[in-house]
Length: 370
Ligand SMILES: *Cc1c(COP(=O)(O)O)cnc(C)c1O
Image (cartoon, rainbow, N blue to C red; front, side, top):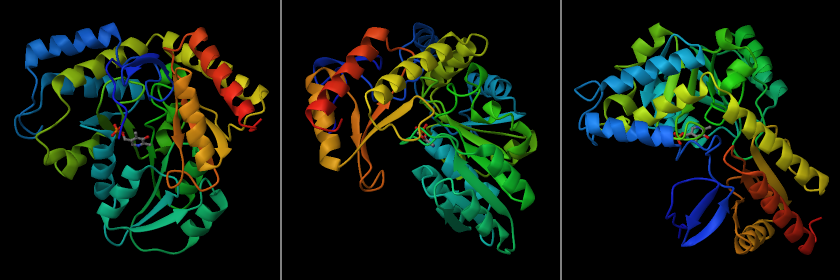
């Protein structure tokens, strides 16, 4: 069964009744229990109540949805945004609007499950290329096809913390006349200036057809979104099935919290800077100790131990020392690459990071890993 949380998300949590350092949440900026977000959510409950009670296209479009979409579009540097109740719903909703039967999708083998589902729902032909293999991707793009083409990938891969080569991918998309979709669920609030995302980091805004994102990770709330041109967002509104058929649009309180997050980080990069300082410290501690952190360049830091049982044992022994980090194994990652996945947050203090790093190094030494 799952472990149970009896506290808000944060650097320290109450997990199954004990206080523990949390190295497993996507709470990159520590906003999930930020006083400004909590206040915004409470105020929205006073204004709008709790349940949305209708789909956005019927009578569930609250003023705060419009406000968040406007703020997000400005933050992301796009013409328009449509907010969904999750990142999963954004991906499954948008892909079938971009392509359909007779069209072709080019998808990285490690793309997020919701991209895979969106591809299936579209009924387009899906060509899966080996992880980040640009040569293989180009071979596939060269094959003649009828219909539209869509290249789609995660910007930051959530199990390895590596970054897709978006500039090269954008160039290939352009060369072969494909649309280019980027899912930046782990890049928003993390990558680029002020956490504006990986597309901004690479200065590729005019090369990306649509972008999807999540409000549940760095932004500390919940929900998802699609960002693109005004014309495309208007086309999407009446067509995205995960949007029009749900009477659970993003609850007004969560919408208000996400808006408060954007307002908090849009012109103050304190949290983003702290996140990267924490990330640099922790990655260096792991590397200096001789641990294998793979190809990460982001605050997702895998400590790759290979064997699934070893990863489980490392996680269990860390838990006994008051640190929670999840073991990840096959089928989520390939066999032989089982790992402990460390998620760094701006909320971690130096003491938290030191304690977690010391514990990992001590245990991996005892286990003969280093
Ligand atoms: C988490 C994640 C999603 C889903 O977003 P939710 O808001 O959590 O539903 C989509 N894509 C990627 C790459 C993710 O990591």
